Length: 494
Image (cartoon, rainbow, N blue to C red; front, side, top):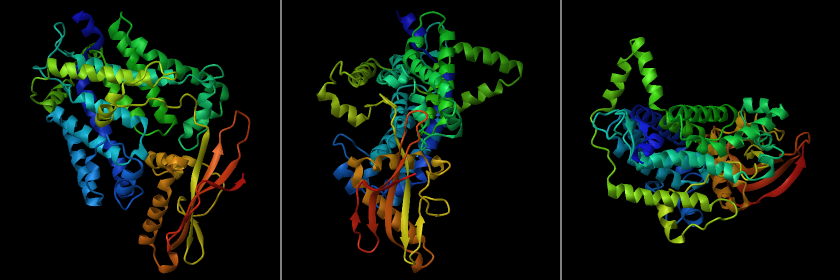
């Protein structure tokens, strides 16, 4: 039984090294992207002051180091500290401690502004959580199965591998609508969302029959990747197939869509599935090319490590928590097969091991659009703060995605359109006015009034042209802070 467990759930230590480095790079990328909007997203001078967060959008079970202060300097120091931990994680310095500090830091930053949440945030958090209980690379003292000293196996290796596959499996299960299989139009609708689609996705959108094939391929991939991984024979080649499928799927997403760090997290996680067979054959190739010094360099980066064997007590606690994670995912399946035990909800929320994999499910979101930030200046002129040259136009841009600085702002825009998040709009408008006026070159260039319009475009079936509805989300006066409007249709035009 132990040998069978090892065959299915081992992780090669060389794969762990690659995973550690890739995971650290994803953390750094995520932090740097967030850092570019530090004031806007994480301070009291931004779009979500602490008082508003606690009043409207706070879960009592949550905690966050980032809520200790709304000051810019405090947030900057927190980000720099977590960035430092990510660098040390990559370097292999006290890797379990660094993984824990990265997990605590990322969790704190995510909880500080939940309006920016994405599925990739859940996956990054879970990868860091399980990484606290994993070795991070090559070390002769690491526990291994009896047949191969390059392999590491524990209950945690099983958990993190299954957790990665859960994201695919439950995403596929949630896609139980007609458009994901019978008429296969889901990818057409997904690539019709201009605010997330890159040029390659736009190109594919114009080949309707190919989108039908692609829809079924995505659906089958998500449903079958876990069963494929559990094939009992040819385990090394099965793992290679799993790696190929995960990498191909997520590179495709990166090339076609902007959906945050989700595909980057999966690409980092794919290292964990790389089998010993790959490294053994790659090692022979490197030796042939006299590049085996690379292996020594990797080992030196890892350095001496403490024994990473998971104790019986720790393993028992983690097993119980993984059972809760599994129950959480099953209870989220449409039809409510089971109910998640309510007494454990605070634990799930406090550790943020709660998760949701309902991407583009059960159906693809049909509402699309972009913001027009109509600002009236003191000299009477009108500009658009959301345009590169501030020219005010209501026509659909040639490339909608270019109007978003990054995916965090895109997600924020998507969320403030939702009526339940209307409380965010005055603070967004106030932030935009203050930011512009602080940099204005003269009194006549100060904003006097800002109107936030959402240009709403419904995705129609193939061959049907959509209309565009101009909706006033918020109107704010710079002088008296008068705020009016909440989803009021202003006009309909095309």
